[in-house]
Amino acid sequence: MPTQGHFPTPMYWDQVHGEKFKAIQNELFLTYQKLKFSRKKGWGKDTHYLSEDPFTRDILTDMDCKLFLNFLDKSLNNYLDQIGFQFERKYHITQSWFTKTCKGQYAHRHDHGANDIAGVYYLQTNERDGNIYFQTPLQLLTPNFIYGCINGDQQIQAKEGLIGLWPGVLEHGTYTNTTDHERISISFNIQYER
Ligand SMILES: [Fe+2]
Image: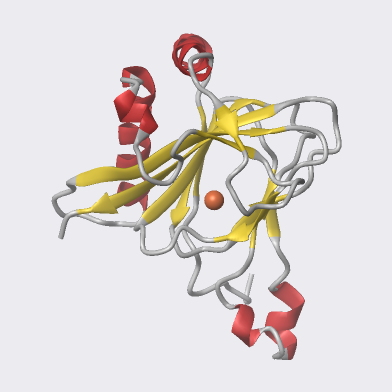
């Protein structure tokens, strides 16, 4: 095709299956059952619930979610391999938290600040309970005719076992959950040493 997309935004999506999926799900559900959820102070009544101290702790490490952390590590390495990063990789999880989204709730559009990578894993979803969407980082160019044709939000369907990784600066949100099903996901931020 003569028309090509340059300056792409690399985003990583992979779904774990089989016995590995069952083991990770079991580990994360056991962790989920130990958590308390509440809405962040100051957020609207129609926003989702978060595990305690969501943006100041790494709950995955604190709760020793070894299987998931191993899956995350492999996913991060795949992501960097696929964008051609060939150097030493030392990282830490700056924050991680669980999110519960009930009927009528959504996540407002936001980014994850200075974190190198932000990500999500879907623990429980009926695949209709509010997809994640991303806004193009080229938003300022939208008044241009060509960018205006291609700069619409991109959404990804939630699926159990799906992990997503993207640059932390990328703005995103979730559509309102219009079903009676509770979506449960885990979010995390990654920072590399350099
Ligand atoms: Fe987010």
